[in-house]
Image (cartoon, rainbow, N blue to C red; front, side):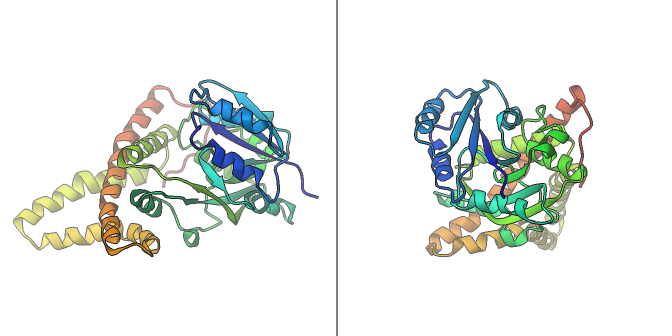
Length: 330
């Protein structure tokens, strides 16, 4: 018999998108036994939308207001308030497939049962830019290695006791918090499973400015958590040493332009490979525009990471997290 399941999420000023999440929860083939949502202090009508939905929800809906709480603190508060031994976690701004919860929780009834089940997530775009951004910045399903996949908290379920044992989400970290939480769960020896058909849809950032801010914050989170030193070092080397050196050599001998072209191809090849399936059905002019977006998106994202990462390191050196947390220097 399946254990009861609580779905938790955090929101902050999501009046424009909260209905998508709530309606998709209400139409699940396996309804949650309860839903707990923590509002970080919305001022745009989100709280009113939640209250209106509560009156017609086909499940128990609990809304907690925690002004100023970051996403980690909000998730911890929601899980603490939830009753179910199985906790399914998602985010505001997403739309859940109707069988999301059923597929996400099904592995818990198997033998041997996992402790953590990862779902998947796909972009739901409304513009050409969003189509390109979603395609090049997210892995495709066939690229996923279930044994090495770290779940996003857009789509994950876990045992409540696992959350408690690792101390919950790190409340000192405002971005990349779900990755650090995943590392803690793996290092504690919990068993992971991958539910490839437990899918949520989310909208990518709508323009380059929003995309830049997103990746700046992600990289700042990497610096705070001491993640991926070598990856960031390689990026600085490529842009601050490799690219200027190639430009200088190309001025002396045009043959070096070929080396630069090969380097650019190597850098962008994976992005274009992900993009190609998303070009189907587009007119030729839009396909050309989409192809042209790729290098700009890549460079803007890399610049955002190079600027955000040292800010996170500076924060860590000055403040430093309490306790011992896992690190990944890859």
